Image 1 (tube, rainbow, N blue to C red):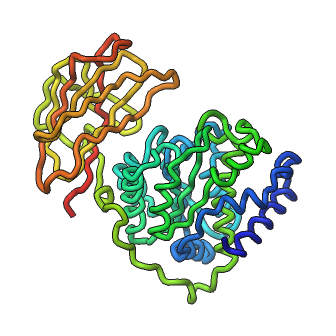
Image 2: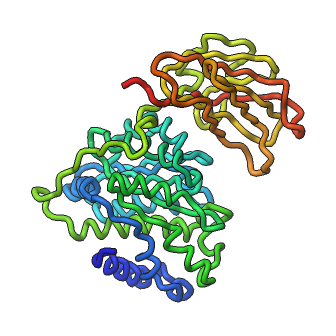
Length: 397
């Protein structure tokens, strides 16, 4: 670990204590050790330096975060206490002469699989200069999750303004997350990475900090947890800023490397009800399904939708909730059909479920067929099904 990072961590811990953030309990945990553990890798900082230099010159800068409900701000008492808002605040305090715009692209209960498909609608139009990606809890710790994260990262890195990207790893109550596989992507692309889990899980295991001190429920940080998330990111930014040369000597930004796993999800898109017309529609009507806008819905078994799509990977997102929901079957060409159950056993509400229907398809056009089945969950009294969006990756390019 870099000596300068340790020095910065200690400096930040002392500064936090001086400003009243660190109470007696926090001091007993050893903030310097917590902050030192939070750094997974500083990575290649050239892109981040470019964004910081832009702000240093007083030019407008766009700071963005993308992720699940943690990024959206769940369990934070008010918007300004969310980690993303706190990161934006740091930029404004460091660069009062610059206009800092903040874009929160977090959507609850979504992973990098959905993130990769919706990124083109939610990030490029804002021209972000610095992006924090947080899917460490919502993604499984798997190679496929790393592949979809890679697609999202590649979409951001190839934006014309060459934004900086950092990864933030949060955790669930068991101390688990997708960091093992996600960090492979971070290392490959030289991304700065910080870990809420690495920093705080040892404190929780040693009972120096209680779970409830930093978390509002099973996965969502409370105000103190959000502040830690933000402070870990901004500590890394402060370290980079402290060593930055003048603009004329800023490091060159390296070309994006070849994919580590694949570039399939670099070329991905999302189609809601307004973006694509079915070639066949028997029994489906227009409905509203947050967060992707107008959807297709039906309560009549036997209802059929067919679409012509072009790509090598096809998935669907649909609304899953503990109500009178049904089961649909999706199939691409002659590939094995996939059943999707919209009934959900939990009480906390609904979410956008995501199922991969087919991948590794041959280039060219394919037929996606969705049929609402007579089959349903035993606990459900109805068949309602909402197809929120088609998600296609491996698009021609």
